[in-house]
Length: 525
Image 1: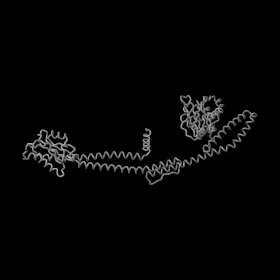
Image 2: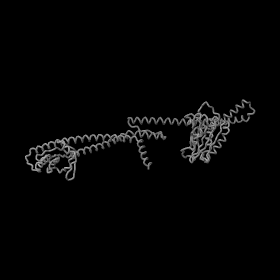
Image 3: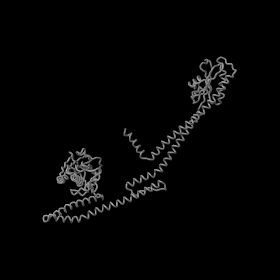
Image 4: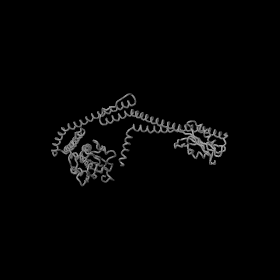
């Protein structure tokens, strides 16, 4: 369940970071919505404050005029009020109701002030329920003895309600007592106006956001389309299609980008073709020279063999010269053979003759043939093998050549120290590692050792007749199997070379059964 929740998030993250257009549009959307919401809120608040302020000023002024008129009517009336009578109250209510117009723009509520006799009549107009008057407003009217107002919900006797403003003031009625006169002005018109403004702003905001997103989409698509085209063309160029080019339109910055890109692609194609031509010439030269040298080399070898058969009749100086000639001919033949092998790799003509072979058998043959060299160098060769057979599909001749090169290399650079050979295998791969305790490798040299004719110390002479191509050929042999040939080393700590081959030729390698880097200078880890 956790993975199921994480995968959509990862997909969304990859989509976010993989699309510049998505990031631009999303950022524009967020910023636009923020600006529209803030501006709309500010505008609505300003409109609301203006409408409410104007409405409050109007109703307070109108209520103040009506309250003064009612007080004048009460003071000037010559009606004699019997105890509990309501003629004057009714007259005041009718007069104020008449001022409200038809339909009425406000309602009136006349409530007896606290302390009045219980028989004091109370009146209301417009079917307004007395519960519409908030207690806080009544307290203000009773305590301040002046005009007061507040927002309220106007409740009607039929159960309906509407937002409104209540304005109240005390009213003294002779022979009856003190009353509280309240004007209730509905604000449904202002609410409708505010709702209209709010809806208009929301519609305009949504329309603005939509139009802006369309504009941003069109602009980013127009701008990024050449960039996408350049990326696609670059990918096809990287895949080897060197004839791909961008279409140039106009003379603007994008056109200059396309022109520069096409010029770059043309230059790269020319350089690649030049390098390919030089490489072909080089491979052909090496192959031709190697083959052309075989005939004179064979003749020289025959002459050297004849001389070698008659060494006893030669003087010491001539005998030594004949021996040196034979040694150098052996080295030259080895170099020529390896040059021919390199030319096969370069031309793609190397063929793998793979069959199931036990790596331990190959290693036994290598150690047997290199035993005289180990004795001459004074290096003890130790072998560590697993309890199981390490069988894999391999070209036995090529693998034997790889392992022999590794062992000979360790003996040559081991300075007489022990050489440790280890074999390992698992269900996917087999491996052999060779470690010496000699001069080692400096940082960065672990990848250089496989270069052709490379030597860590050019002034150091090869003592076993090496050609400088052994490790390079070994690397190509390992790659031909689909395997790895790796090196590790540190100055004064020696070096480790590890060969890893898949049990089945062509299968992918994910790890090696043997470690590459040693631990604390003891063994390999």
